Length: 464
Image 1 (cartoon, rainbow, N blue to C red):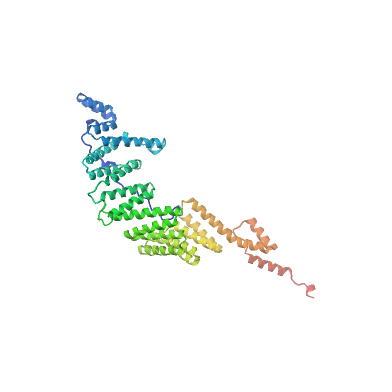
Image 2: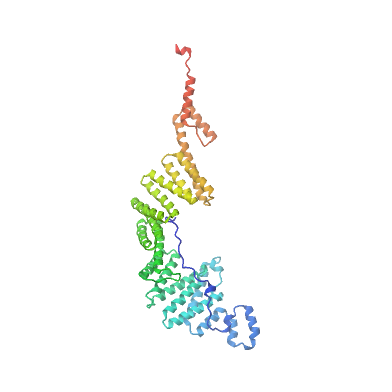
């Protein structure tokens, strides 16, 4: 269960597709261009006279083996070892997942020539740059490899190369820490994607500290420090939500206070969202006055931004806090404002929530007829909007039943307490018919008095 509005978990940004990232391989032997059996047959038919012993062996080998041989012949032993390790890791992951898994149905890495080409090209370039201690070039090649493997089934490869980028960035001393900052950002996104929020916080905080006071911008023109503020705000909020689920209210409040600081540096909308989350955290901790203070800040910001969805959500939460303080009339007033906004912006779920909340308030205060009215409105609103949430529909039906039962309870109890024949006859008649209404005790009493008056008409004998 999430306490806060949904904040989507971020993944590393989309990068160019494999087609866009396709590189031109360095001059390799002719066999590297021959990947299919038909192509091999055609090549042999055309060039059989000029076929060398080395080329003949190349046709018999797999594409992976030819790539590895080429790396070794050119002296790229580290690239060969890394490629071989990655292929073994893929096979281990496949075996661990077992038959029927998504990775089991995928082709092996060694059976995908396009990916082998990318690995060959960038790994050898990175190794060459490393030999000359040009770590900036090493970083760029490793980052390009991460960009190549952004599809879901290749995420493990992408994450591996992001980690390699991070390790390489520690060695770069001539750019003021920019590549190190970018590497921290990418690692934070990887850990966030894996729901490892504590590790993500470590990397985002390092990203923020490295970009403070800098004018660095990313490829889209976004200031890196601004991006760091947004990342930290988001991860602090997600972490605080988890803390509230675990009943760690004070830790959540401290974390959200950090998030508020980041939001104040970034924009007003984020500040309003954080104030709302802090209000919920204080409410969960039982600190109602502080909760109202933060929620009022949220109300002020959402009105200023004309954010009606956020305003409706804030009205609803304020009503809950006021109800906890015993201020029922004020809570109803805020709920009615919430209901009006939900109608205006056609927020079906919000309207159902407002009706149900009002019904519960009236039900708890003993105004059962009013409670029935709002429960019925909630059911009608849910039906009209065709909500697909079956559990919610069943819950509203239960509320309607509870409201109806409570409204009948007073009349039935009055009949039972009267304990006279006419009241008991009304109860038996109601039980037999099972109607939604029961005769009003007042009406029954009036009928009884009328009957008694007729039964005791004075006779001449009694008047004498």
